[in-house]
Image 1 (cartoon, helix red, strand yellow):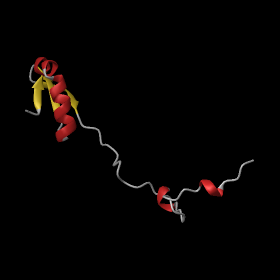
Image 2 (cartoon, one colour):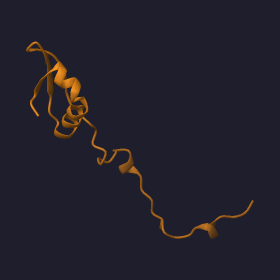
Image 3 (cartoon, helix red, strand yellow):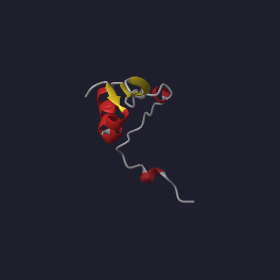
Image 4 (cartoon, helix red, strand yellow):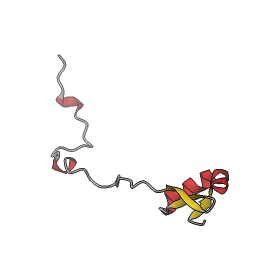
Length: 75
């Protein structure tokens, strides 16, 4: 897909343009009468797989697979 599109073509192919910008991280310039008027740019996303610094401080020494129902008392 070209990086410059006229308004009419951009209007016709808007969904495809958005998918291209999102998936390929490209910037598309929209033109009118050959002059640039707007740009569609990808948004920088946060890395969702990066561990939060606060979560790395949490530790648990018990066994998460054990049934601890016997440890609770009825009130």
